[in-house]
Length: 398
Image 1 (cartoon, rainbow, N blue to C red):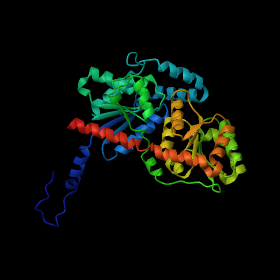
Image 2: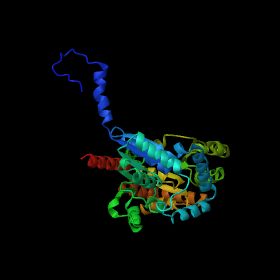
Image 3: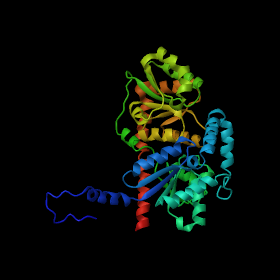
Image 4: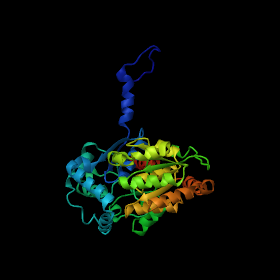
């Protein structure tokens, strides 16, 4: 490193001499490989949230190994997955139950050789100091690679992105540690045979910015607009009926409807509602401003996906679930119910009734749900997992 001692005060070091210490500092950061998969948003949300929490503390590489190793197959299988969960949830339940009876450490999933090969190559070439998996298949691949090539072995942990209802595929690897969202999930995993000392409750690693939202107080009184953040994640027919039921239930209900990737298919079928209800209905397509919307809305209505539920919990916003997948999303809904922060509503009319119930008595039920979430403190999961990783790395070097 350059030595500037004894130099005159007017000495100007070269650009290389200035940058060299900075480059050295960057090179000393540990490398953390974060593996994810695009089958559901929860895995990607957890991976991105952890990478954000590690920013400046570690060099991270977030990789969807399925998308990278088998792009064509991934595209087809992901489309099939999305079609099944939206059109044939009963078939998804059957597939989920079958996987819950299978130990994939003993019976690996066929056809994933390219994915495992890419993981092995990434370990060889990028040389991470630590691996975090937010998708249940990768720990088994790591076990296989480390058994075959012990020189590549490094510490890893598994971030479980489901709550309470835990599929067997999460827990049969040799993972040194699993992180989970809550104590109920921890107890379930212990009942399923996972050693208690290998489970750490960290909450879900969502975007760290969501922690800031809960610091901003939100209130409601009976003369104010009651703002609903609505995620349209089903068909145009469902969106139209649910939006109509909610807006007709009470003139104080104002809705921001997020269509996302479904904008082209849904918007033409609901645009007439904007004329009918005016400024009480705002429609948006794809947005990166979900934290901002959460900050300004009183309640969220949407599907019980892991990412959505835990973003809502972290931001301390009550939620009404209008659609859930049998299996893991039942667990996410149970978590909302156990926390006293939300519930499942099966129909558009039930959705409208629940909103008016939350607003009754000057918003007594809504305030109770909001207070429950503040007390539960289901936030800062990304920083908890990041600290866990960094502590493990420190133990490794010491």
